[in-house]
Amino acid sequence: MNQVFRALSDPTRREVLKLLRRRPMTAGELAEKFPVAKPTMSRHFAVLREAGLIESEKSGTTITYRLQLSVLEDALLGFTSAFGFDEQVKASREVAAVKPGRSVS
View 1 (cartoon, rainbow, N blue to C red):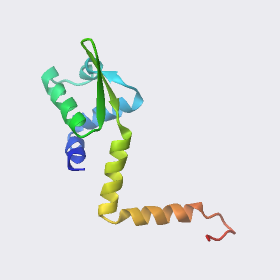
View 2: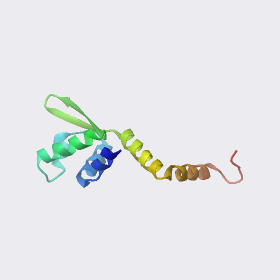
View 3: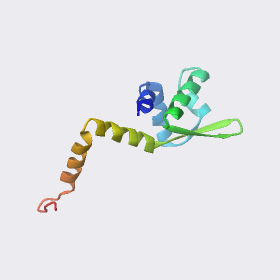
View 4: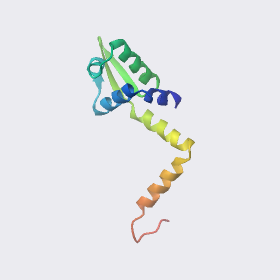
């Protein structure tokens, strides 16, 4: 979980994740979106890969990145559990599931 939050602490990496949410993208496509050097972007990609937030596939000289949403979801669930928010979320879902005139059994 620490690696995930370290990766999420940087605004450039958060923006990369937003872009990858739409579709897989090549390293070049992603790098074009940011005013930083390619080695800097490579380091951002490495941090995201180490955290398990993205996966990469190499085809020749092209690297394509994909978002690993399940890793982010697991980290957020772990975070909420660590602070006891998971019980509040569960209770909220149960309340929302109850329709007027019905009781929860």
